[in-house]
Amino acid sequence: MTGEFPFRNLPQRHSMALIVQKYGGTSVGTIERIENVADKVIGWRERGHQIVVVVSAMSGETDRLIGLAKGITPRPNPREMDVLLATGEQVTIALLCIALEKRGCPARSYTGSQVRILTDNAFNKARIEDVEVAAMRDDLNHGRIIVVAGFQGVDKDGNITTLGRGGSDTTGVALAAALKADECQIYTDVDGVYTTDPRVVPDARRLDRITFEEMLEMASLGSKVLQIRSVEFAGKHNVPLRVLSTFQEGPGTLITFEEAFEAESMEKELISGIAFNRDEAKLTVLGVPDRPGIAYSILGPVSAANIEVDMIIQNISHDGTTDFTFTVHRNDYERTLEILKEHACALGAREVSGDLKIAKLSLVGIGMRSHAGVASRMFGALAKEGINIRMISTSEIKISVVVDEKYLELGVRALHEAFELDKAA
Image (tube, rainbow, N blue to C red; front, side, top):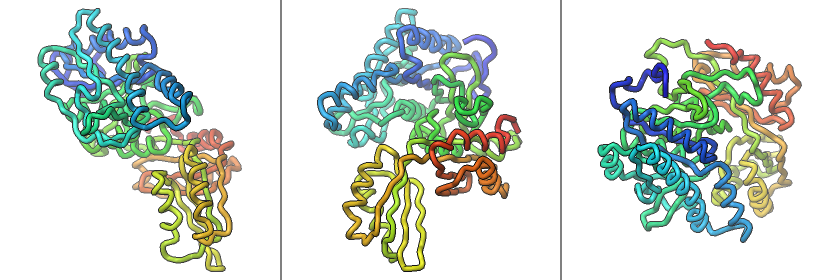
């Protein structure tokens, strides 16, 4: 890296920091890009910093491997899928170390099991339980750059496990927490966190900072910049997290605690961003008896099938029955509908129906806590564009609505303009 050191919370040029950097699939998608990452990493090392690098599989590789497995059977064995998918990152760590060594920089690669990133045994979506750091610290003390395979770990029985889509972010944060790193930097193809997707709103603005709480909401509501579990992990273990671009210089977006904003006497914006999610599906159970436990009777079998429910609405009618509506991920729609129809008679339901053509639109901002009227302003902006609201959910720092999918982008643009998110506070 050249020019002025842009990160105020890190030690400056002649002081050593321990930095964990994660590079996503597009960042290492070709040999040329892997060479570019090697140059970037060496630039940080030449400043005197200790560097641990976490990499994803080359872009498209995980999908290719999934395609191979599903070419054999539509439902591959989960354990064998993890064995297969973990090979993608193994290729990348070796290639990056080869590129670093070519430049005269000592480096050592580690798979998740070699580091011993210990996870539970939930194949395809394992959770990290512990990270062993002794070998990594020894390598760092000997001046080596460490390159770790993201997205993977090992359970107590020695089985290879994977952490789910975007799991390399979680690997990076977990290593940063275990090593007590000064910062975890997530390099991707965007130069930070924006007020909304710039592909939908060209005037979207990059945020210099955002709180963990806001980023957690953004990630859970459809923002694809960071995996939600990585944000949870960083917030829990107090790991400073920064989103940067692999392909251009800049300070990116620092994800920090709300107190950091207050400490700098910054005026916090009312709304930080607009998140949206097209991967939603809505299901309704009509005319079930209005009695205690009916919600559990409906959602219990759904939960038992490991299907996550998002928004929920229950309407009581005058005849002693209730209509129960909820949303799930679109990939879980068919299975959820099947479960509800299996239990419809036992529930005493009049009808079970569903809708795939919906989307969720959300405002996020810690400034909502101290400002009234955000909801009415939001609803007014949508009404002005003729957009009907199908469901509403609120929290202290979030308002989400379900709308017809065809109105999603219009709604995002309308809200971005109504809350003047193209302008800094």
